[in-house]
Image 1 (cartoon, rainbow, N blue to C red):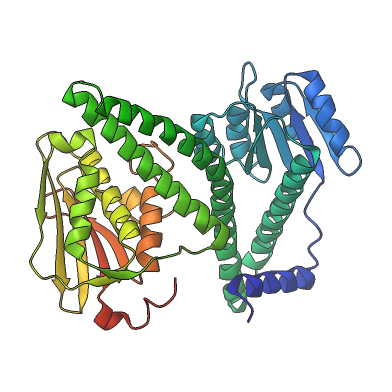
Image 2 (image 1 turned 45 degrees about the vertical axis):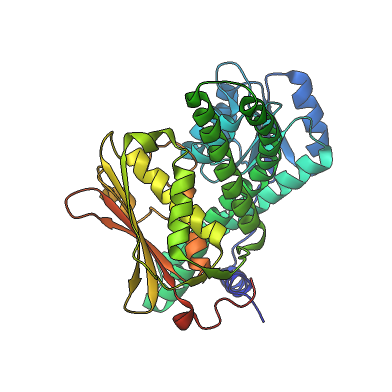
Length: 413
């Protein structure tokens, strides 16, 4: 059976043939590095099949990009005057139709976040790179650029047509948005594989330090700080693993079993207690007796609540309240709620809050926590939403079907 993506690709191909839209790629690649030998080495790889342009600085690259037809810019990150990410950030505004690839010899998490959030980089490669790897990534970036340009060309053509083509126009615009989101998720998936490996190595060291601290008389505050750090890295590892899995398969694997909602809340509070802000807030819980069990992946459902509680802790000030509750609903569902007394959710974020790369923390982080929470909840055939809390603040509601209404949702993974 054909997938939705295959059906959409067929429709786009039909429109391309119908309107005679030519290949939108230029086969132009711009290589940017302040080391001439590096540029020369890269140029040799591309000279047979690409129109190669070279620049030794960000300013020179911008001048070339303003004049030459390009598909891809491959730039070193560490350059004097203007870094590679700063260059791609400017190009994103001046040449949004060009894909950017960052090369670096430094495992810099902040650079990765900037490449995704600020510069919308297509890919991030660590030096030294093999010729085949670079050529493959550039070819894929060029194909992506060509598809985007084709869609944009078709959108402009269809915009002048009658209402009978409105469905095709909506399809193309939806495909364009999905293409951007999926490519960014794919980029994140590739990046998280390396970051996850590095974090696991860090965890080995942290566990060793934790064991040493346990054998040594140290202040309780140091033990708590160590426990908070390990809990934070554990949570980040779990998010990265889920993101990597979803970026490869388009789905999350669930380990389903009967789960007590009260136990999920208690586990989430125990993990969130490792956050140093937990002690500075009034954290309250409301758990009625004998809640109906849900068929769920306990670890992933706990991850959702931990993320919501930590967001609430960050959104509130000292001595303010964060309330966590679980309750049975008349429709045979269980509802988890997390409320805070913070500033609430601005209207500019409300409609985009559960989309990827949207952060409610002033640009801090990658903006993936609530998106991953939505994926987990929807994988359980549930729903998640954010509303204004009466009296001020935010209220997040997670609804999960109980087994009696879940049908065969618990079958398989």
